[in-house]
Image (cartoon, rainbow, N blue to C red):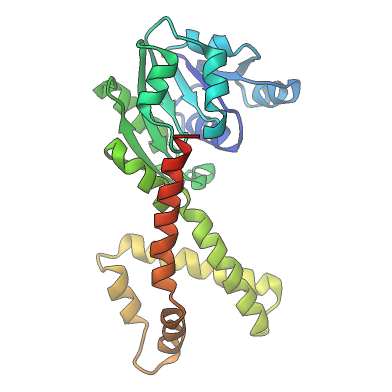
Length: 265
């Protein structure tokens, strides 16, 4: 199997490759992790991965998972330099276009961009993929397999990736933010912190699974539990009056704009 190098052995990079190994979609011995510290090297070894402190070693592999923060891309690209052999770069950096990666690393590079979210840590992620100008069908197939091992995958056009960043990559934070307030409300209603967390967490899990399995729209499902003049209707009225829908529309738009700004940073 072609070797995969990983630059960016943080939570996201580790989750992606460990999830693939755990799903038997990849062998640990086919992965080379680029690390900066002995502690990271020890961590990589415990997971069965070979490691190197020489970032140029990544350019000798057939495939590269680039999982660094977008603000670090220029530094990383300068350290790698122009790549002198054909290589597939799978990037999970928000805002950094495939054209910019190709320009920085040279004309032997093929790019597939991926926007996963944090749920890849439990193999329940949502990832949007888009191929760059030189990406082949095989490149997209490999990338789809890589992220299918840790969740669901949607292939789209690159122009949609800023929006994907806002909708699904940042999306878990929206739910966590809501859960914070929801748990606080449960505690104010009289439940203990532990009880409040259990009530909210299981409600979210059940509702999400119902949404996933049902053929009904979210609107139809909401109406099923919203009796006229009932308790749910009273709650929905408050959320509507406080502008929850408008706030969500503005939040996603703001995150989309920020993703585009990262490309210019």
